[in-house]
Image (cartoon, rainbow, N blue to C red):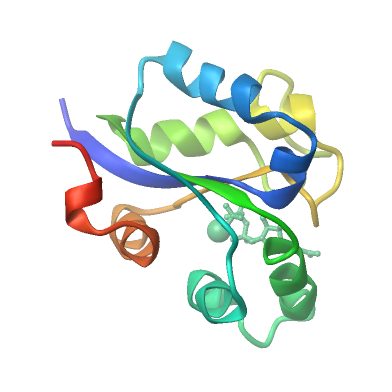
Length: 140
Ligand code: RTP
Ligand code: MG
């Protein structure tokens, strides 16, 4: 077993559409463990850091506007190969391509508003969870 932690965030559209219970339920039923959880209103500084890899891209400003538009639910999720497993659970970036059964495949239609984020690599997960949680806020 390779136990990993990953950073997961229900985006503003997911919170507004009252999908928290549905999404958290899927993560729990999969067998992953929630080891930290926090509701946050992201400011521009944190948004720029979270999405720094996309700086300069055509959709960057729109992305920052969207992610700062309302509260998000941040989580640290733990389990066997949690990084890969969470990416599989959320589905493709564009919900139109995301398979049925995935969170984006079942619950979203717009690439700009795709309900959920999950880190795409273990190093990124560490960096992203550090933006939102101190070590003493993550359950051992
Ligand atoms: P995320 O980082 O949010 O988990 O999404 P991802 O890895 O599946 O996709 P990524 O390439 O990292 O893109 C980050 C977010 O930017 C928005 N986006 N819009 N209009 C566009 O062409 C476009 N491309 C990306 C999406 O909200 C995507 O989740
Ligand atoms: Mg990404």
